[in-house]
Image (cartoon, rainbow, N blue to C red; front, top):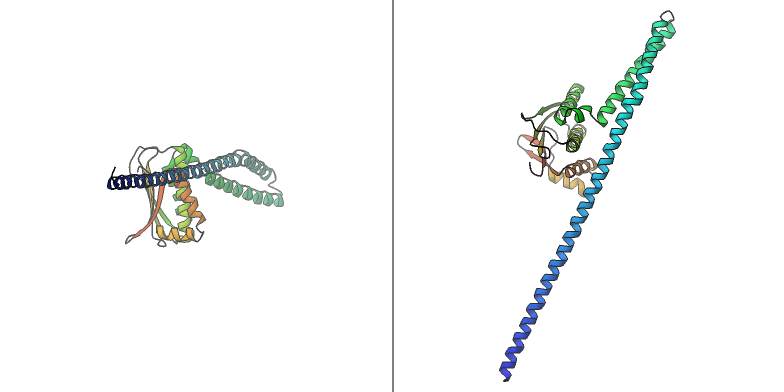
Length: 262
């Protein structure tokens, strides 16, 4: 074998070896990236499960407290109110006793009303019995009656119903969004559009004339380790496989919540 042939075979062998090394490095990098992606996905799944467990526990506690407030304390106060009314009827000649009974009755009636409000806030009866749209309508009526702002619910005609778990979270999201607009957004006019496509697919748009707020503003708050309420809203949207975006255009500001397939 001549030296030139040896050199050619040597170069060829070196080339094959170099190509093999390159292919090995590429394969190794792909494997590392795949492992990193798998770990990231596992972490995301864990976080989602953690959030779901937290929100499920929170909702169960809300339901338990609501039942206790309504069944135990509410019943006891109603009995007390009946007894005080009996005292008042039988003590009409005693001016002091009558005034005392009147004061006690006012206090008990006020307490019952407050307990009903707390119970409704913890677990709106209409949410489980009637549905999301009716619950939002009731909530907005209460807000309008308070005079804090003017809020309108717009729902296209549809027979679609959303499952209870998604409905509860979507109600809480809307509740917190409206609360933020009233506390920080200075909104005097709000219009909420709700579209229910089926049990899992929906969209909700909150149009308002309050402070301009965009996704970039949200990111800045997150970078400053602020916006706890916004993070809570985002966690709830992820729980129901949805996303939330804050937009602003010539007509005003929009908060858009959409399910993945909406």
